[in-house]
Length: 336
Length: 281
Image (tube, rainbow over all chains, first blue to last red; front, side, top):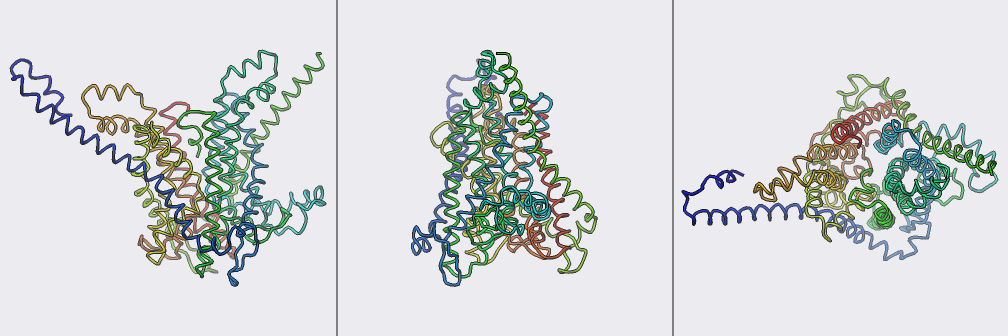
């Protein structure tokens, strides 16, 4: 502000009445600046809620014809026939949930391992490099995971993993049938690798937020270090860890490219993880630009709507859980 | 009694070992992916790869110049649209975000951040492709911008909040109006961190494929017209990886290595810059 020095200059010479209008003028212009600044940033901030509302509205409006024609049965019928104009999303919903749960089964132990090791056991010098590497996993583009899945993971599964799984668990329906490569199993494993960094980063934050008095009290009572983690630290951060896992689940549900590339894209519900499947996101990626009739398009919008609602519910619950434990503006979003 | 305590000590040691092994298992895929990328992609990368456009399917040779330029343009558009909105929203959250609206914006930014990117692609298609009747790079850029906004808003907020309040008080006490204090003192002090956040957001946008599938669509030819379909590295990898030709697979690995390099340079330099500034972050 250029006017700041001039205020100090008039000591006695200036008439008493002169500064007053200047001050008023300046204050008014300052208020204008403040108002403009405030309204501009408030307007920009409002873009976020508006975007969400518009996205939801778009999906609902465009999905409406399909929802009205097929009703709630859209969710649990499994015919997807663009020629006969009959659509049921059950195979995709099933595939989305199964692949995401499979991913969680694999990713949760790994990410909790990372979080616990880094907060409780690792030497100090190791923390930065390891958490950096884990965060890098989140930086790998989805399509690169897909590429790796097609040309490295699937051949690896075919040669080493599936024969072993079949030998041990082949009698269960989960691992029956022929393995062609593209399968629910491959999709779940790729998803697991992709969500590890998210779950690990958030649960690490949650575990670091556990007061060290909890740890010290347990150790003081004679607990071993593991017992202190298991009986004091983890229970204290339980809600936040569950939130972290749900954030990972939200990621897995909506992940598109890598899954599309390895899951097989078939409208079937198969009990076996070795069979190809489909997910909602993969269906959108594959069929959206090919949808020729308006009902086909509307059915795909309905799939998008189901996916959107599912991820929003999961994400909202997760945020609330994480916020409850690790208070503070940044909790849970830094890693994402 | 001593037997039991030995058992407990062994249990503790075993569990520590298991946790450490899980940690190694979590990091291992990253090393495999990087190893495979270099092993399968590096040999195909030469000067021509960067400056040539693709040759017809079945022939060997050709490059991905069109996709590299396309990624640059689409991500540039995304930055032009997304940066002002995201940073502005972040300033709001940091400066005025204490009330109910602040809570709502913060919460919904996190929810939007978790929204599947393919859904955002559909959103962009509805507004920018369907009414016009054809796919365009601009629609792709807009879709990526929507992805960037919540990330930018949250990082900006976090960075502005890190600025000590005494700086704000000092500026206000010197007669600086609030808006200048906010922009010239608070945001300026936090600028390094905001740039870091922007780099991370841009890196993520550069790797995205799903929102581009039915917005930018992809293009076999070199194009700089933002109102027409445009190729990006990520779309290129998708098409080549799922295609039938060996030659395409080779190019897919090479493109993936280039894309990964681009994303890594952006995010590593961003992290390095932050670490310089904030010590252990």
